[in-house]
Length: 175
Image (cartoon, rainbow, N blue to C red; front, top):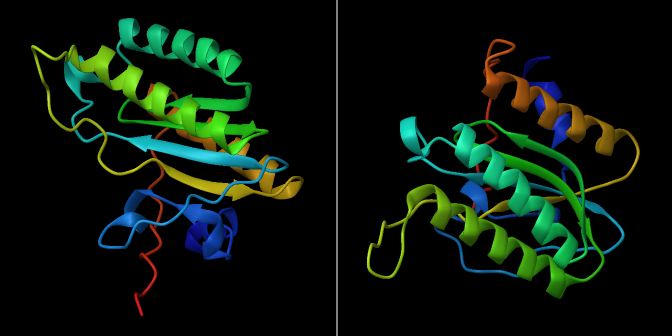
């Protein structure tokens, strides 16, 4: 597929992306949101390896149950979910910004606490590498492409297909 195909997956409009590596060294901004479009989310952790891997049976089943519970509570529709061990991919749609923010906060926090076993008396430190990466996804071909991408990532994480290295687009120039 090459790096050009990877760029097709990512919308050229930088206003539709937020978080991840894009947020490093940049001023905080408002996360793009549309109640009519789906979103691709990625939560990445550098410490999710070995016993802390998100693919560990006890963690994976908890993450699925937590996702199901919180998506119902906050009225978030989950179209696709992928667990790659060190990161999670979600394709979702929320009708209201407030419910999306509450869902994201609750999901990321609950998963991090469960996987690390952290508590007030037993702090762990930083679990997620960056802010959750999110981008708005148009319906149609872009939606199908991102769902296929999440599915491919899931299969790679499970070791069912070999990992295919992808070129990562550099963060935008600051100016």
